[in-house]
Every structure is written in C-alpha cells, then in structure tokens.
Image 1 (spheres, one colour):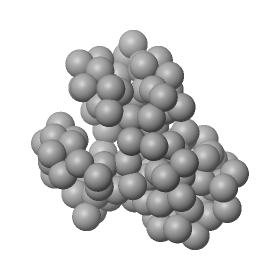
Image 2 (cartoon, one colour):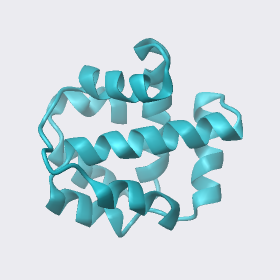
Image 3 (tube, one colour):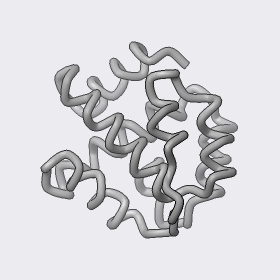
Amino acid sequence: MDYAELLQQVQAAAALDRESAERVLLATTMTLAERLSRHELTLLCVRLPEELQAALAAGSPTWRPFDPDEFVGRVAERLGAQPQAAWTQVRAVLLGTLDREVAELEALRQRLPREFGALMA
C-alpha cells in the first residue's frame, strides 16, 4: 500500500489537511498497536506502508482489549481533540488503511469485538 495514496484517502474521507491527516493516521496506528496482540500486529504490519510500520512494530508490551469508545478516546487524547471529532477521523483511517484489501478488513474485523463494526462500516 502506498503511503501518499493512503494519506490522500484519509484527507478526503475526514476533510483534513495533509498535516492533520498524518497526525490522525499515526495516532490511530499507535492506538491499534495498544489494542492488538503482538501476533496480530505482525500480520497487519507487513501490509502497511513503511511509514506506519514503526508505530505498529513498537506495539505495547501490555496490550489489552478495549471497546471502540476507549479506542477513539485514546486517539482523541493523542490528537488533543474531542472524541466526537476523532470518531470520523479514526473511521477514515481504518477504512482507508484496509479498503484496498477486503481480506485484510475482514481479518481485522474478526480480531476486534463486534462493537468496532461501526468504525469499519
């Protein structure tokens, strides 16, 4: 997947400028690294642009499951934004990251609880 193309998709989907789209993309990726297990991160990492692999590869040694509201809240905190504003931006990243590969989107959906469906629909 090409980083510039992904960035353009996030910009368009969330109506953001380039700098804001990059911040949202990185914040969402870092939050995914906190949510997914080391094995799940490895599977996803190889499919992401090089620019995002470091954020995922760092992962979190104490990953734990959390719901979509906490996921968006963590992204919002990283961005210094309100969770309501971050919701659309997180959704743009998840869909932009995964929409090229239907199998990847389905695989990630299976790894996350059903409640995450609203972020990936």
